[in-house]
Length: 297
Image (cartoon, helix red, strand yellow):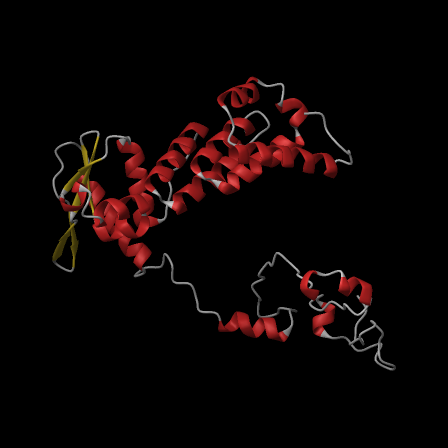
């Protein structure tokens, strides 16, 4: 890229050819002086809107980034998340201590000893005859489902010490509570496990766990063969990132997908209007990208 500051028409000042601007060298600046008046008159409200995806690069001590970027990086606060003494580490220790004492149908209130003090939870979640000691404030902060249930006096559970959850498995609830307290998900070994946990995360309103399951399904199990079923799952439970990726896979391989039983079943079950529109758009986008004017649906 040619160095030096340019005028509005993109010309280098005389004698400045060897001079390099750090901003120009890194492509930060862009000259718009080459646009004529007719271009400007065609803009809505005489405004040019630019949208860009920005990636942050963490500078090193020997970084060649412009000084302005390096100075901002040095002023950034250090991350404390997960370190000993952080809230994440302490809540994880609380969860682990309670898990050791509350598993099984006969488990009572679990205690967590800190400096000689015993701290018990203020709510017990009962699922498949297993009891999980928990904290209302933490549940409400991390889950929209528990926030509505435990803070609204119109629900009888708000005043109860024990709350039954019959629509979940104990294994799924344990995984969800582990994420609530630690931000750590289970080792998802199969697609079915990831799908079950995504459904539970959707029901409980735990957005971080939904994103974790969605990303795992996308990275490990999204293929041409599974795209339709994962699209359906993502659409039903609001997993927007997985939905977009599944649509892209279907659009790029529609000639194959449209002949599968999964696609026929999706059509028979009735797609919602927005999903139909987005699927057609994905097919059209893939056709344009492939250099075809249209594709037979």
